[in-house]
Image (cartoon, rainbow, N blue to C red; front, side, top):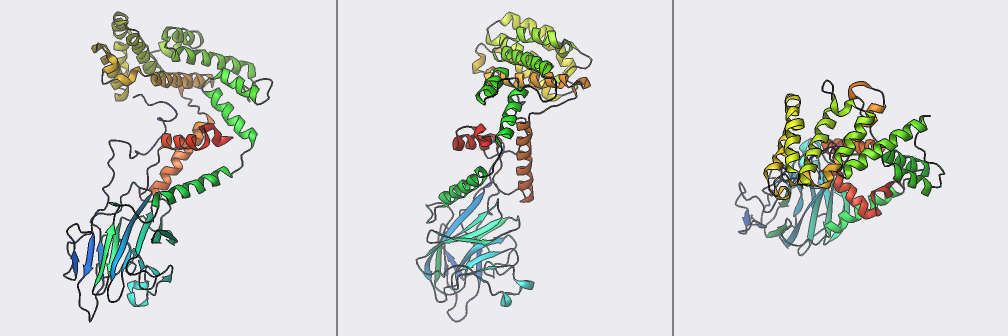
Length: 463
């Protein structure tokens, strides 16, 4: 519930796992509305047959009812040619909403197609003149009994095609970030095709190809050489920043260092002392010993929790809320009531005009006392051990800021690892923005989880 740790504090676009964000519906049928009498559709609108004259054909483009969803990394659909008809000029590809439906995909601006009669790929004709659009050699022709597929990679902005389960390679690159519709094209009498938008198994192993691509990308990342000294310093900095003194010493010993490198600023003794203090404070908070943690803070920074003129709002609200929660956790109800009256109640006057979030935190925290079984209440997450870690991180950051010597808690130091993660999130957000918001949303916790599964731990990314 409280968002102040390295993963939840970073700016991040909502993901498909967020209940507040609904994924765009996927195409599931062809759009029969507005089509001429040349085309006959089955009841489910997934099969179309050309009924035109045998003397003179007329091009027809048929879009899906819905566009490609924006939240996927790769969209794919397939078309099976049931009958090639008299000319065999069936096509599949992608078009935009206002594309002319009297043209094959690939014969108008911002449309792309793979044609069955010549195996060529078509897109962006000069001056919209169909007569001079000769297409480009691409793949084999296809006819009755063949299944062809079209894929749009929203992350790389590329289009590819398949035939009978075989990837034919990238057909178009630098595709503009527009809302595309899966589209088929027909021309002559007797042509009949069926489309599969995912209701049944594809002939092409799309998921396998996606995993293969991710594996190749992962191997490329692993091929990047990083010096052992750089990675060691990165881990050192992370452990030092969050006050894991014992782990830092063990890590240095494991690396063959006789003494822990606790500072690079020429003040090893002072910083080692500060690190020891931060470690003790963190350990007390993680153990739920808030009185001990408060005494440690009073000894080294008496104004951090007691100053009302320029309090560190984060520390003040997070620390005291957790103190109240620990009293609830220990079933010390009378002590919790007195603490709410003496400590939390006065904070409402300080916080309410500064932050609605702070005020909401106070409200949710105090509400725990109304439940006989707070573990079953709507605020049950406040009793999770993860909240202790959030508060420990907030206090640790304040102690580091204080050690920097800057007034009024203005300093906001960051671990180098956190800076790297922030940069990663920013780059992925910019990439998504450049693609018009189309593509799978980036989730940092999900990304780190995938890395852990692939590398037996997140830290192995840097080893």
